[in-house]
Each structure stands twice: as structure tokens, then as C-alpha cells.
Length: 137
Picture: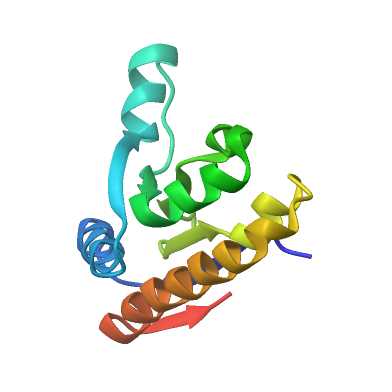
């Protein structure tokens, strides 16, 4: 069973990041953090790595609902969406599967929230898929 939802494209990396962030915004997610893994690894370890961004996405309304049901849920927030280049030159967008993520909390009160976030992430990936020639993974 996969722990992510994904789409692959041959589009420009920066364009994919931009479209992904806009699509997240349209679905009510703010990007609380944007980690440039390539830059961080170069700076901290002096190593080369693929272009790789971690976008920490949070929908405040849904996060609030989840925290009311499971106060420790904050350890699983924000939900990460990554955009990275592969050796083959494709760009991949992956979002954590919220059903898998909150499943570890074993709290049925989170099921509807996880389904809502899952559906929103599917729509985000759908925007990327429509914008570029993409393939769902």
C-alpha cells in the first residue's frame, strides 16, 4: 500500500512548483514551510542532490478540526507535498496520503478529515496533470 499520491511530468521544475503551490492555495492550503533540500544538502553537507522541494501544506480549518479530535495530531502536521526531479529528467509531485498518515493515530474521528484532505490533494495533482503532460502514479 502506498503512502503517497503522485503525478509525474516532463515540465519545467519551477513551473511545476508554482502550479502546485497555486493549486494548494485554491484548495485552502497555505504553505507553512518551503524547504529546498538541494540547497540545504549543498550547504550543510557539500553534496549534490536533485532539485527537491518539501512544501509543508496546511488547511487551517481541517487542522483545527483534527486537533480537536486528536490533540497530538500536530506531530503529523503540516502535510508534506514534495516536488522533485528524477535522474530521467521528469518532475514528480507527491503528496502524503492523509489516510495513511492519520491511520497511525487510530482515531475514527479523523477518518472524514483524512478523506477530505485526500480528495483535495487528488484535485491538486489533477491540476498539475491537466496543466502539463503528466502521468498519475
